[in-house]
Length: 292
Image (cartoon, rainbow, N blue to C red):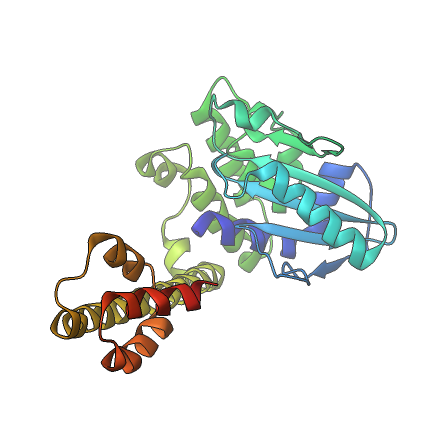
């Protein structure tokens, strides 16, 4: 969650840096598009759409290659929705952040019977760090780039951060650098080169943290609702089973299995009508009715 929010902040604050690095072009009139698309809304862990005069740049940051649904299908889904909505050229780039030997980070297309969809893949640990060291917004990613001396690279990034003149910008970039560097460096090493105090003092850290907490709380609420509904369903099921046993005697295992699958609404309805049952046949007929 922290990495997602960090990268979202960097892309939204420094879109020119990312467009210059990824598209090798200059753009000043850039619009940040919402990450949720119409139809059935979908939202990725970390996705940003940058719209210039001629195209949309869709960035997908992945800490790990595992994804549900699979990432190639998600990229096709995003492309179709973006193209339907904006009808323009779309450049899609997946940036994998953490080194891995998984074959999934080498997949750059979706293929089905009559459909092939391609997108770019960047494994950041294979990239030359020099271009990333040239722009403030890319410095945090430089800590993840290719190097034979990780400690020297981290020190080089820290020096570049210290040279940022505007204090608030320096502080924010320092925080983002520390957060992303945590993917590959031990905290003790990070603290040797970057001020830990920036974390506590930085408004962006608090913003990233609060956004992460809000998303976490929302997911917790959703999970809590699901758990609460399931607990309510189980309680209703136990009540209905007791009433059926008192009304009809022991229920055979096949019918019990079918009852286990009933929704809370169906269980509540069953609780009202079961007093009219006189045999298991009545229960079976009722089940057949709701399943047809």
